[in-house]
Image (cartoon, rainbow, N blue to C red; front, side, top):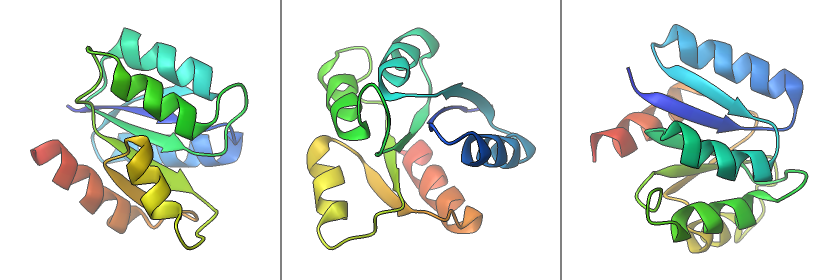
Length: 121
């Protein structure tokens, strides 16, 4: 079963999304801030990372860059999650090293499609 690292500081979003992903058969590990997300990426070796971009300690842009710069984790796919669906946000997320981008509130079928596409690579 694929392991997903969910980096999300909002407890309600974190609990809801992790439960839904577990029901779909994923092994889910959780980090509550960007610094913890970088550490968990190295310790847990997830198959994919869902990265909230507005995080305490280290924002999602910085955490993504650090994960993609490390040899062990540079090929781990990362999907940016953001409530700020502003013009240019997708491009900024991709420039930071994210492999895809999705907006909140999460539409699970759409997000699952993106997860499955990246895991199939």
